[in-house]
Every structure is written in C-alpha cells, then in structure tokens.
Image 1: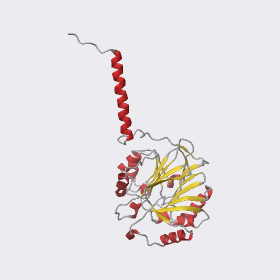
Image 2: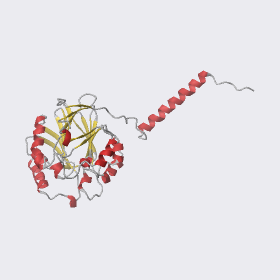
Image 3: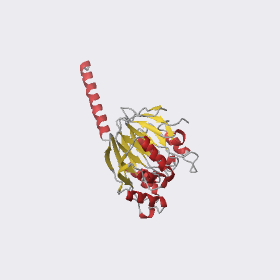
Image 4: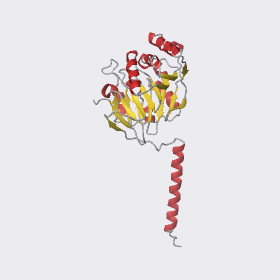
Length: 308
C-alpha cells in the first residue's frame, strides 16, 4: 500500500506547535535563571561636556582611593570619600553638584583611602541621613587616628552607624541594593560592602576592595549582579575581578578609581586583560579624571573630565 503524504496544512500546524513549545521552554529557562536573555550589553555614549542631568552617578577622582556620588533630584547617596587629604575636594564636589543632603553614606570598609575623606563631609554643613558600614571582626578593627576621628565626627553629628546587610532601598529615582560579606576573612578588604544602583537608563555595581575570596561569597548569594557599569574592585588589583565575577556582571563599561603612578602597580595588567574579555570601554580616574554618567532618559551617557 502506498504511504499517504502529509498535507502542507498539517506540516505548518506541527511547525507552529513546535515553535510555540520552544518559545515557552526558552521563556521558562530565562524566568528561572537557567539562561539570560538580557545579556546584550548597553551602548554608552561619551562626551567631554559637563552633565546638567537630574540623575547622575559620578566616580570622583580622589587619587588612590574611591568615591562615588549618586544624585537623583534632591536625593543623594555617597559611597566612600577617598583619603583624609581629599575630604575638602569631596565637599567641594558635593557643593558643585548642589548636594545639601545625603540620604545615605556608605563606607565600603574601614581603610583610610575609602573612609578618610568622610570626616570632612561629616564636619561640613551637608545634612546626613543614614550611615552604613560593614560589621567587622574585632581583630580587624582599625586603631588608626583616622578611624577614631571618623567615629568622633559621626557622634558629634548626632548620628549612628548601621551595620551593612543585604537589603534594597530607594534613593530618589534610584533603586539601591547592598550586599554584606559574612565569611571569616583575614583581610579587611573582603568585608567591603558591594552596592548596586539601578536607574531607568542603566545600572552600576560598586565593588569596594572586595577580593576574589569574598567574590565567591557574593556570587553564592544568587543575586542579580548584572550591571552596565562596574567600579572595578580594589583599584584593579590582581587579587580582584575574577572571571566568575566579571561573567556575572557582564559590564558594558568598567571604571577604575586609581592614583597616577601609584606605588601599588594598580591597575594590574592581568586584571585589565580579564576585563577586556567583557568590554573594551575601560576608564580610569588617573587618566580621565572624574567620570560622570548621565542617567536621565532611557540610555546612559558618560562625561569625562579629561581625555588621555
């Protein structure tokens, strides 16, 4: 007996059913995090013109240290403020950005190149809401003059410190997430608070001085760490920015806060090579000065203080 031919109509029906099933499967895999359909990297335009946007994220040039300011209208958050001798520069920048109140101050960890300049900020006329710092083991608590002065400035401002934790809160139009490390580490860097800032235009992740050891703990939190812009951990040190971390973040742009001709050899060549596997857009405060991202609208644009 001759075989009956499958009709063209039946073939199209089967193909349609298969296509629908595939779409449902892919959608389910994306929903449950097995695959990620949003891995496409954002395009970020670059300009040398100063930003007058309402929503900005600035990576302030404080030499060999870190300082990030996120401003959304009348709301603002300051993450780190460089060394003690950079405090006045940070206050001047806040004033230039018309910041009269900081809803949050986050001190990523208690090393002087991150907390030192915060003393001048606290002693200024700028109003401060909440202060977040990591809870650290007693054996790692600094005994430095700088740390003592910081605690005194906090007390004199009538404020208290809240221990960092995994949480999410709003600052103006921004959604801010913090991640606290709780492992048993021998290096203060590994207690750095990691902060993610999400805007309508794009997202940022600020790594503090977190090293690869604690990056594993961060990755184990099973949080969404993807971001358009990463402030590279530990100034581009060889001890940070593992492939696993970079793959999870998948940045379109990397910013390295680092001092010119610093004695640490930052950023490390091998670290730069790892970052270049994900993006060729790498900017440095020693070469580009303060770097400001305009977060108005639906796309990020970046303004650099100076070209290389």
